[in-house]
View 1: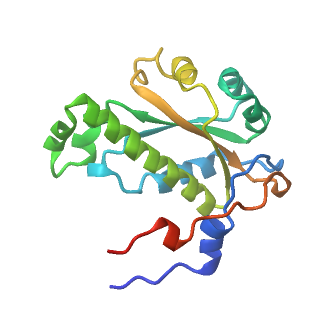
View 2: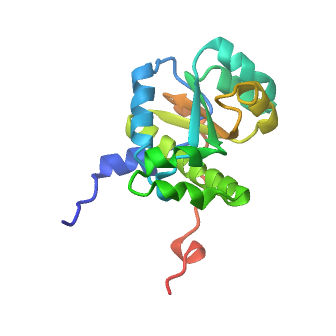
Amino acid sequence: MTKAPVNDHALDQIWRHGRSYNGWTPHSVPETLIRATYDLTKMGMTSANCSPARFVFLQSSEAKARLKPFLMDGNVEKTMVAPWVVIIAHDLEFHEKIPQLFPHNPGAKDWFSEEDNRHTTAFRNGTLQGAYLMLAARALGLDCGPMSGFDNAGVDQEFFLGDEATKNWRSNWLCNIGHGDDSTIFERSPRLSFEEACYIL
């Protein structure tokens, strides 16, 4: 059956009017909405359903204080006041869960036995899932402020490496989530045209 496009309101909210926010309104974001965001995110496609992304949602002042020393100066204020901050990471040993996630072919775990391939797959698919997270958040009426200006090694040491359960997780980027303050965004930057960015063969 041919599917119909979503309506223009949805396209505007998720794509056309979606922006990277640098500041936030005082409106709170309940944990139930964060959980709903993840429940949409997890439905996105990954290689062999490997789902290597791991998300650490920081809400408390104490948790954000642990992150603060590793942020670039320009990212500190907007992150400390954001309702939620997400460390978007990936599990380098994601393949251990493939028998659970890909039950019709549990042997697919062996596709990722070689370390370089496994790490590349974790990074690629974890990055993809991070993008799904932002689209899911926008779809549920939230705004996002993704950032890469931070010390990855420091964040990994602080949040992951000291715990047996997370010792194989590695940070990719950060994303603030809340209700964005429109006064904190810039004019939209240009985008490449189809002719500049695409080929049809």
